[in-house]
Length: 178
Image 1 (cartoon, helix red, strand yellow):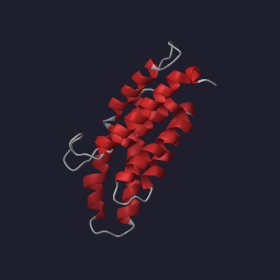
Image 2 (tube, one colour):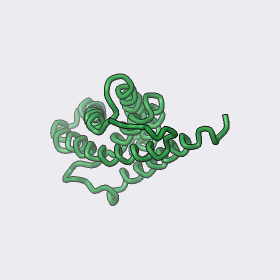
Image 3 (cartoon, one colour):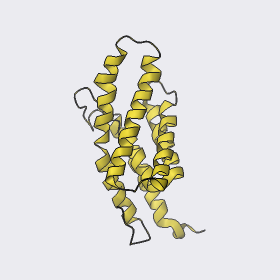
């Protein structure tokens, strides 16, 4: 197989990697994406979901691992939680689009909402609730749930940007999304 045979696919995936690295940088700087009251945008979750919707399950798994590793590399814990969580997110999101749902903005919002809640609540349960911190429910209500909802808003941007990239790098000019 020659490089020219899949040149557009390689370009598409290189653009996805570049977008993932830029998103990780934006997520970890407060200047790029401001906080909304106490909610912080967790941009890598909707990006992971949207990439998985176009790359399907195994590509979603690979990009989920990339998103998670970039997130874990910048976090204080560095325990691998986000690598595992976003790998699962990417794989399941890709599989759901392959077998159950159509690839459209409504599906992206639903899947992104489910996984934003799942990642935030599971992080809260593992690292706040189980350790018995005082005021754990207040932290959930004032930070983790608002952050999950705020993060879902970025699904619009990522879905349409990735859709444009896929359309521009597709060999089939008749590609359509419902």
